[in-house]
Image (cartoon, rainbow, N blue to C red; front, side):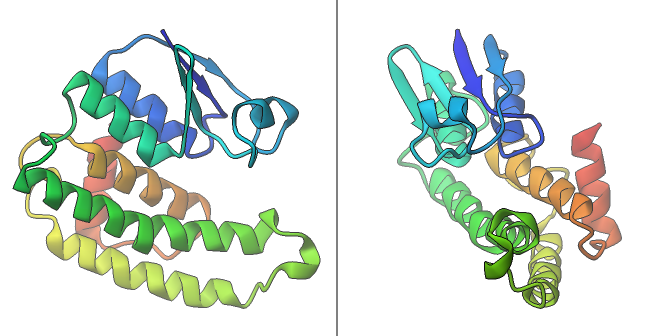
Length: 184
């Protein structure tokens, strides 16, 4: 059984969703980032971490990819064009969605107050709007990659939810409906 370290209101949610889709049993240890418990699993104190036997894996997307590959679900096979396209979209989402939201979070509450630059959040919101428009244009069906739920969908939906919670500008109706359908 897997052990997932981290609170649900964090990137840990992505790992929990992946495990739920795969149908793999797991135990969640809901600890806050940078807590003493989190530091036991990741020297940076970041969550999530995944314990699989004696191995401890970190970084939500690396964990999701590991689980999808191990269980042969939610992903295209390694070494295929479909997988390269999936990986390209995953990395784009990390660069253009996740990184923007993380930067906004850092300048809102993560960094020491004297290091925060609140004015940068307006630029980040603008960048997110541009990226959301690009993702909306790319969305041709119910899912980002063909006709089945895949890792990029989980990542995109988590980021869309994060953007709502962070009070980022609302995405267009098509992308909003996509996110709402995945949340259902």
